[in-house]
Image (cartoon, rainbow, N blue to C red; front, top):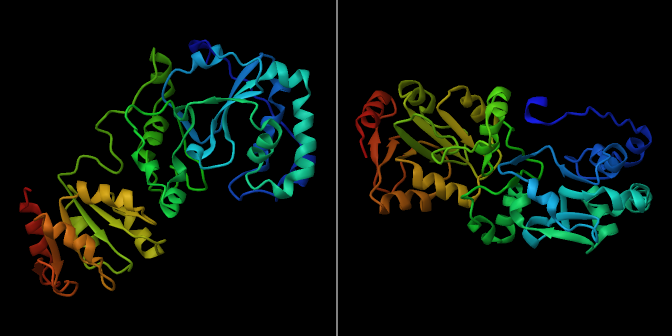
Length: 351
């Protein structure tokens, strides 16, 4: 860190009293240590400090934030979930340490939490909003772009969330909610950006004179694959999928489901070229449909005819087996006991 002109301070906050009082009174994915941000002015002597949650990525230089005229405000922060939530999101806060110390804000927050913990549905964020109300400097959404709200946005019909520009990347990408980009079965947007930064070596970070950016060609789940195939299913029985994956290592097989998935499907991810998309949102499914070359109608049980008809109407190939074919859909049918013929058809497909 010294080579970058920075210093890492290891501060350990042991507050057993707070754990006992606050541990079980918030969302499951919010640990009681989230309240530790109350005490930042006690450990950081600077007049201002930029607090960042641990589940976010910084893609741009943020030094200019420290130039804000913050004297009349306790913090600078971004509104919660693009204005759909209450107040501001506490995952990114430029804190006016000087004013906090002058007015003993840390103690005020502790006392307010003791009184209101049972009504604080969003933990420390609810408490901070109660105390500061409108006394914060509103930052642009790009300084706390809350990507984890996708599921709620889709369920409540807030489609504008999916139309917000992502190029260039927001200055700070915040992966809110219980689902995180490092989860095995996560399919949240911009997951690949988190993995890009996670894979950076410290040596390359230190040697770089500016923040490194993911390549524009970086796509979730993509790689050096010649073709991509899609199957949307509500059943965990997929005819010959693993045989296809083994025979076609240069093809990527996407298996999507609107629901949670069984261990049987999860086990298929042992194949490097099988990607599982559980609880997929319509916007992500639409992206997959646009990027995939072939639809594999190889699932049993319910058929998603709207997806099949979309491929059919666009003249894009749909391959199936005689045991899984869908009546009324133009498909190329192969015998289930002659899987090699489908393998050869996929190998010869050039788009």
